[in-house]
Image 1: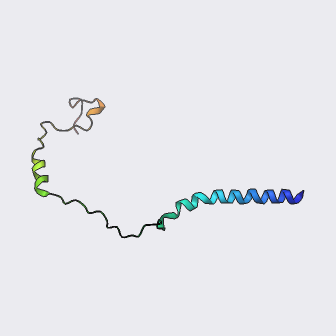
Image 2 (image 1 turned 60 degrees about the vertical axis):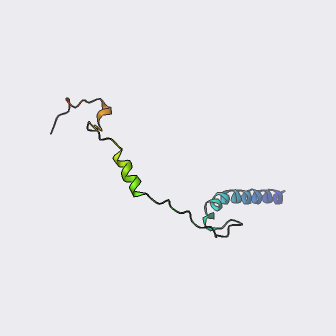
Image 3 (image 1 turned 90 degrees about the vertical axis):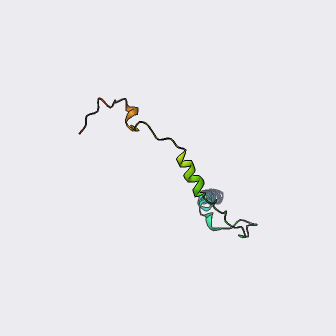
Length: 84
């Protein structure tokens, strides 16, 4: 009877150790290559920036007629604000 309890206790302890070690193994697996990954793939090229098109697009943005008020959403009007 004592052997059965001991065997059961050891089995439960081993199962608990395996279950608790599984997440650590999943987090530490960053350095391994997957099967079939030969590493021959070239990194994706960045698209070339067209400076002329960028500058033309900047010219099409209209100028703001009024100054942006970052505190405007608080409901404080500019007349109520006190200048320092």
